[in-house]
Image (cartoon, rainbow, N blue to C red; front, side, top):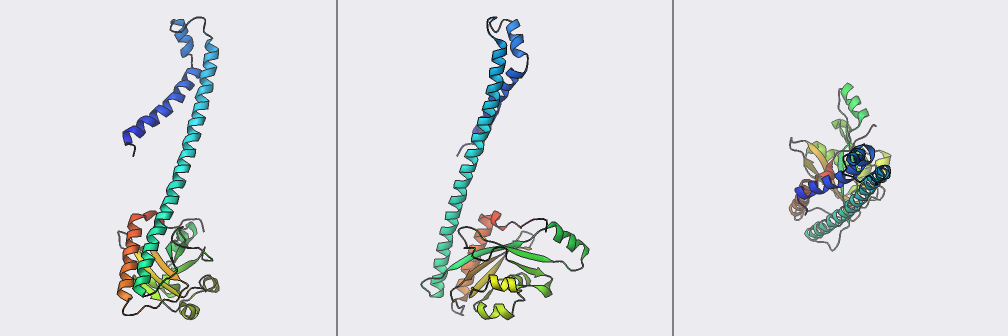
Length: 265
């Protein structure tokens, strides 16, 4: 990895050269140098000034463009590598989960729900007696297949209006699960028709909160499946430990995944 000193030196040199050419092309330095006989009398100073100006503009454009392109390429490579790494660690975790459940295979998606921060909601809460808070979904490549779940959100405050397992998790501040979603989603979790349609193919879900340093819930991680999964007295502890450890590691190592969603509305 290149040192900070090397990066600074490279950045200064790359900025200095086109700046120097632009300076020589836009000032009277060359005329002064010719009068002082530092530059030969037969040299066309105006031509040199135009050449330096052109070089300054060209180098600035080339260097900026090439740096932007290289930065985009490197960022794309890093994103792809991060996605592959998250996919790999997820597969390891799912394999361990599957083993603890005594199954051969379980198709599990890991989705992150984060607070929705919007200008409109902040204004509404400022003038309201009861605070409203929603957690909206983030489907991360490598962790989940989005399917029809995009734009899904659940209300967690006020307490009386909480929705889904996300609302239950926020309320109880601990891990909660449901292994009979086909029936309970229709009647138990205060879901509207839109939310029911978005989650109609799920049979199992377990959700786990993550906490900020001040003790507030800053995200809720959901592990859901279309497969039938039953939590029993025998597998409950192993299941809980695996999910809790994985969630905490993900929260600590990749904190950018857990940033709140902003916007106007």
